[in-house]
Image (cartoon, rainbow, N blue to C red; front, side, top):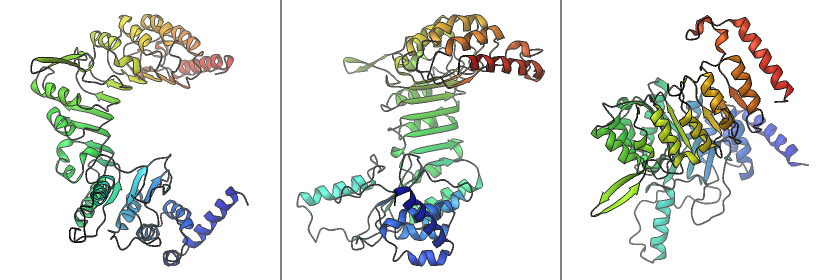
Length: 472
């Protein structure tokens, strides 16, 4: 029998067992290890919260990941059921048939399986283990192992508690919805009940309104975070948070309030931003940077004693830069086109900055600089006119790795739109283009409500016919 047929039979058997939930929970005591994963998948997808909680209690592997699994309804309820099933284990309760679970991963990741291969017998092995926190399983187990190897541990010096550290991996979003607040409160209570034995490892943190969630952040180890998204905060609050999230590789800031770019708060923010050596993605929105981009991109001299060192705020390996609604000027685009970071960019978003108009040379230079790496380009609502677009078409057609191009809400005429599309059809990796409605489709271009639907339909028909001819 092939693997596909076996998997189908296992799925049917799991569904049959779950049709009687009390019986399914009772059967866990005798369930072979190999049947735990298929039964868990069906229980999770079917929303069988009691079974899921019971399975977590006796899970026979060291880690459990949601992975690609998802449910539309009762999402928080089933997560709380899994967390509620966590057991604080002792060293004596580690037999092959006892509950071994040490790492519960509630993050959705399509590339992650339900459990990892058990390669190491010395430490609880998991590809997703926390590596930064001193409270992580990896750090605590390594420390204990090293001490034992040095012969410094005897029966008299063993700690009286035999509790093992457990790890909960979860992505969190702090907002004002009641259900989210209930889930965060549930997590806090679980941490308090564990008396330090449960480590919450949050890799992806989203905060809406920093002032409303400052106190809640205290139960998290902020050093674990590698992706931070923050909306509505004062700049000094951002700086304080960045000082604790030193391992970030992605940061998104929007609607950040500060008085001026020459103030102390902004200088302190730049210094702290420069400490994020792993940073690869930066997104700033509603963040005033008019004529200030050089402070983020250009080299600076730092005085250390009698020595001067050269450093940059943003690292050269930056591959994602989003600067929407930042009030950028042509000077800022010139700085960006001359920066070392431009040669590595895969994603560039300059939308909602009135920067192009009739001045196109800096942007054309920028496109030439990023041609070898750029995959995603967004320049929506940037006052790109026919003359600007015509001037940059040759440079754009050399961006051979471009996959997505979005330049909506720009005053472009139909002839220039057709000319652009004819030039970029040669970009074989380009799959998705969002183009502006040509100006002739409006009675008055600046008023979208004046759109002529008949003219728009004609435009769509012409573009579809052109793309069909070139087989794109």
